[in-house]
Each structure stands twice: as C-alpha cells, then as structure tokens.
Image 1 (cartoon, one colour):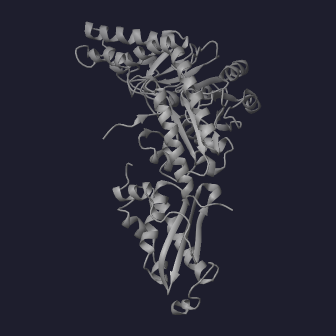
Image 2 (cartoon, rainbow over the protein chains, first blue to last red):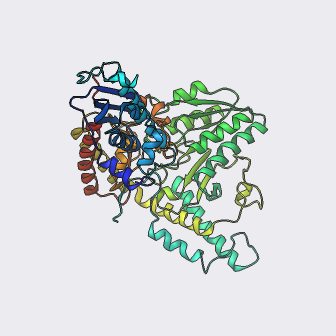
Image 3 (tube, each protein chain N blue to C red):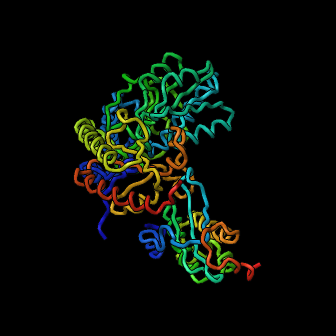
Length: 137
Length: 387
C-alpha cells in the first residue's frame, strides 16, 4: 500500500472495533451512502467517559483506517475530549496518510461529533446515566 | 517481496523480448541520426525507421508515408486534434468540434484548449452500454463541424465504439475523423479504409512495445498543422530527432501483433467471459460497466456495490489492479466515464478494472475470483447496514 504507513495499512487490513456496538448510547453518521462514502460511529458512554466505540464504513482505505483509529483514540476520553478530536489527530496517530487522502479522515471526525451529539440529545437508546451531561453543560 | 500478478494491461504492457532484441543495436552500435543523409550511419538508421514505418502501416492497412512517429499517444492526440482543427479552421471550413465524454484527457483537454481559442465544442455522452452511437454524432454535426474525434475503444470500461459508422458519416459530411485507437490497435483488427479514418493515434507501450513512442496515421491529403516545430522531420508534422530504437521497437511489436493478435484476442475474450461469469455467479450486487459483447478482449470493468473500489484494489494487494481513472484516484471524485454511463456516484466508486494480457493465465483468474469473494465479503461486512 504505497503512501500508507505500516500502521495505517494494518488498520485498513485489520480494522479495530469494526461492526455494531452492543449497548451503544450514541450513534452518529457522516457522508452519504449513495455517494459511496459513509461512516457510522457508535459510542457507549458511562459516567461521562467513552468506554467503548465501534465503527462501520463504506469508504476508501483511508476512511477505514481513520474510522478504526478514531475508535481507539476515543476509548477512555471524556465527552468534551471526544468533541475535541480532530481529523489531524487521527491522521497523526496513523503515522500520516498519503497526499490527498487526509480529507477522507474527516468523515471520522464528523461521525464522532454526531455520535456525541446523539448521546447528548438522548436519542442514543439505552442510557445508564441519564443526567451526567450536566457535568458538561 | 513477491511480485503481484499484473492485471493492469490498459495502463501499460511489458516489452516483448523480441522487440527489445530488435531495438538493442540502435542504442549502441547503430546510433546514427536517421536524418543524417551524408553518411552510412544515417542511412542505416533511416533504413531501420523505414522498415518500422512499413510495419506500423501494415498493422492498420495504411501506406508507409501516412505514418508519423511521435513520442506516444498523448502527442499523437494533440497533433491530430489541435493540428487538424486549426488547419481546417485556417482553410475557412469552420470552427466546430465534436468529441465524446469517454475520451482520454489528451483529447478532451486539447478540445478544451481549442475552445479557449474560439472553437465550439459538442461532447457526446455514451449510452448505458458505454457506446456513442453514430446517430448521436449525426445529430451534433453542423455545416461548420471540422473535426470529430471518437475513441475506437474506451480504455476504462472497454466498450468498442462504432467507428465504422461514425467514420462513414464524417466522410459523407466532409468532416475530418480522428480516432484514438491506442487501446484497440494491435489487439483487434483495424483497417483505415474499412473504417473511413483520416487520423488515428496509437502507442507502442500499450501493445508490448517500448514507452515513449507512438504514431499518428495521417491520411494522404489531410494536412494537420504541426504542434512541435523545428527541423521538419516526419514530413514537417513532428520535428525532433527520431527516436530510432523506440521506433524500431514499435515497428517490431506491430509486426508481431499483426500475426498474433487474432489468437490472443480469442484467448483473452474466453478468459474475460469466464471471469465475468465467475464473478457474477459468486458475488451478488455486481454491475458490469460497458457493453458485455462489444468490448476489448482483455477488459473487464465491474462495480462491486457496497464496496469502495480503491479499498478493494488495495485489499487485493497480490494483484496489480486499478480503477481505470488513475488521475482521479487520489481525489474523492468518481470516474467521469462511469458517471457519463449513468452510474450513481456510489456505484462508480465501487468500480475495479481488470486488464488481462499476454501474461494472464487461467489459474491467476481463479485465484482472483477466490480472493474477490473474500475481500468483497469483508469490505461489505465493514459497511453500515442501510435500513
């Protein structure tokens, strides 16, 4: 995989946390399936912290690697820390992406924000700590 | 690291060792300038070029003095389109051009540059099979149309174009007809009289010749204005010292292709047909891009819906594949050719081009199908389920 770091290539070939997330209480999507560019990210938040994250994507190798890395970076973060995650952080953690492919990781950033927002408005399904967002208001 | 199995023969092909053998002396001991008329070094180089010119002409039913050597198909296309259009415009014949949405950039962007010079341009889209019909060209023809350029076969989705009907139409209308036959010549028969052709571009490296050399067929009496000017080589149409070894290699490969292309076309058509059948029977949700019957023998272009084509190509790293629109693959833009066929962006982005050639063996394609099944399944399992 020319232009991809070994780490990014590994995240593409062996994505971490791929699939559905049991007990998710925040789900967000970015991109558009009709355009062949779509990322769905789910988080489980307990006591204001992300305890688990998972992703699904229809996208290029960079989108797959970024989705995978984003789920790794999210674990253990507070909700506010999650909202501060930027695509450049994901790209840096992957050891860079080929020129022109950095933009593909934006989907992951957008989906993280959407998942956290989804959690905050309480549309994320089961919630074990319904009032904790007061800490972040 | 082991080498991947090469399935990108539209991008380029390996040099035929017999062509290399023919070329080799012209790099070293026979280094003469083919334009040097005062000594035997020049004469021997000129003789080699003459032989090559005859071999290229023989492949397409032309006369030797109708072959202009260039540095490749891009240059041939530039010369044909810009030179042909400007020559006809200068003669007061008009300033309208017609081309198609499935051309190589060296045609489309030359047309675009001519637009900036004040030419009018009509770009015809293909039908759902990837074919530009003669009727579509007919309805775009105007009294001031000076040049029509239609590829003989699309390099991306392989569809063969009805150049015989389009060429006849242009002849009847008195319009120059140019075809970019880079992907077809040497793979399928082409005769510049059977297909009424004024200008035809071809390239050596697509047909087991060397890179950096090609030719433009220019029908006698057709007088494009040169793009590269200088010493007046190549009948004044392409100045510059002749690339003698490259030209010898082009001539050699043309001679071999003329003898061998029929059997090879038959072999590749059978392999391609079986590959498509195996894909279709084993993987749901696949879409063939381009006509099933009217296509280049070695070309298969398939969209694996629910996958990203680039992801699939990278996942199949033991095969050398491409999407066919290399210039765009770094950007998130689906293939313009596949969009022109009417594909949704998501389907266009799911496309992979399989380019079979001389080295392709049946067992390579059996392995390919097994790996496609695995990787398409894996990538689809990563995708969000859409309710």
